[in-house]
Image 1 (cartoon, one colour):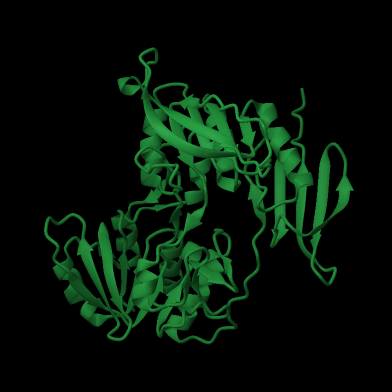
Image 2 (image 1 turned 60 degrees about the vertical axis):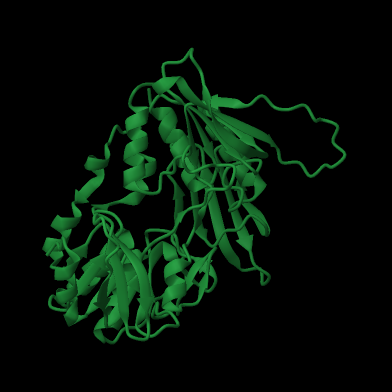
Length: 416
């Protein structure tokens, strides 16, 4: 039941039930899990966008596959809401949460006034995700991110006009995947990172050096050990881009050598687009309003077994939450997390959520990278296998127990 005005939503929500904030993968997984076990309990889904169902990890592969945003949407928000028999408040902003009265104040972003509507809840699930970090050197009005289908669609429209030069700031998983995707789509790509190689915050130098070599062999320009200091708009009358405008990216070596005599300024990059892939953060407004324990870097703190927050009747799931101080920003565990929350909300007996770090797989075709466990760059990494075609390393903890393993393989050469 897709609700288009908040007065109807308010009367519907007098039945209270479950309120879910956020219509990404996490929020919809909770709905699926609840509806699999209870078709009657009222559910209200609140989202700042349309609530369309799509698989976000596909965004880093879609440009080279010539897939538009509409191709990635499995069901519109209204269609999905009707199927699941939930009340959808699309294009709606949550203004405040009162954990004492167990109410939420919301405002429709499609209305011209600031009228607030109050919605009650018996149980609440925070599934609002995380949003990209934009350092001061990356102004949001000039720099793209690929963390949401709406922004992806806008960028794809710009790139559809022909081959362009794109700078990507940040060579983590997402930045490295996007770099290859854009290259395969026919664009020139420059990947810039503070570290000497991609994935350096996760893996040791022995492993990351292979990744850097593989992506550079494709034709991606990798600038490792550099910090972007500014992105500014410049006019270039010799190019065919819209209004003759391009972007200038100023960058400098990230050097700790205070005695360095190399002060020669670097020639700035002139590009068509800049994409920020510099990490995620969780907005503090709603966690603070709800009174839940929270860390801006890792997210909302939850009980590992139940995914309850420290506030009564409030749960958290997905990108916005953390377990034992570690952010949970991978898709694979969402079904199990949602199943636990559904059982707990419905009062069913359950064995508790057992968090297992998912396998991390880089989607690049230039090199196969698989990681299990909880990797971190610093630590006691030991080589198990090393050849031109394969590298396997284990991360040992203080007790000499394997806590993570990385396997890197050269891609198979197609048969003639």
